[in-house]
Amino acid sequence: MVDHRESTFKGIGEVELYYQSWKPTGKVKAVLAMVHGLGGHSNKYNNIIQHLKPKQYAIYGFDMRGHGRSPGQRGYINSWAEFREDVRIFLALIQTQHPGCPIFLLGHSLGSIVVLDYVLHYPQAAAVLKGVIILAPSLGKVGVSKIKLFLGQLLSWVWPRFTLNTGLDLAAGTRDEKVLATYTQDALRHTLGTARLATEFFDTVAWINHHTAEWRSPLLILHGGADRVALPEGGKIFYEQLTSCTDKTRIEYPDAYHELQDDLNYQEVLADLESWLEKHLPLIR
Image (cartoon, rainbow, N blue to C red; front, side, top):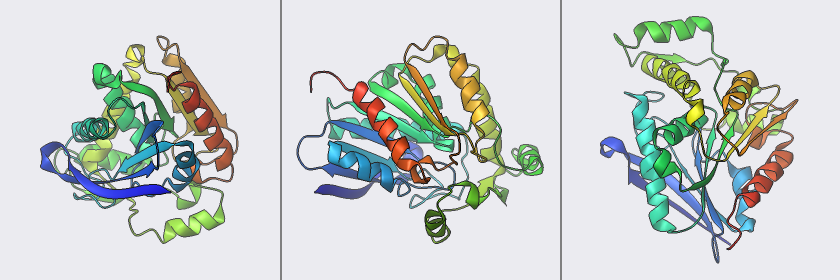
């Protein structure tokens, strides 16, 4: 049995953010905290939850501001620091609920940028993490038209809330037709991005890529070789630049798409994830 709970926590600026957790009965071996991608929400990772909960992992996820069940204009932030501080507060909440328990932090797509940015800005706080996992990181070219990206940069400071459909191809998410059908029925999902989010995103990616020498946390990068939403080359370059990181692993699945946790080879992906987590748990449990 699993204890599923839903609640809210106060993010930066006193914004009430929705979160949920799945806790196994008995002793919790470790906690996996997840940060979703653009237009997503914390309900998108059921395969990860179903795979890890029998292994005595507790899983936590929250809906970022402007996403899912959390308030805020869809796809808008004032500054990237809001995402970063929300993650900091969320992890502090988890630590109070599971004192002394090993914690891993996972980010998917845009969520991977939030996670990388958090760890690099708060190395002391991040030192408590046993490891960081990023799925399909948006570290290079993304599947949004150049015209829309140019408009975002042009309007960010004069009309920051200007909104466009990202135009990301839904079919680029997964090769599984049944999963694609559920995506189209997902009322919590959105496809919107604002001018301010665009400029904050690209500024943050540039900042991350300029601070790779400061990375110290154990890191696992999982990417689909056929990802058209977040092209894998950016993650590969980032991985190669981590010259100061002694514990890093990158796995690329040649034919896989963007939503690795929902693609045809998801069981292979989850097996690799579990294996890496187990290797990074304390020997004494």
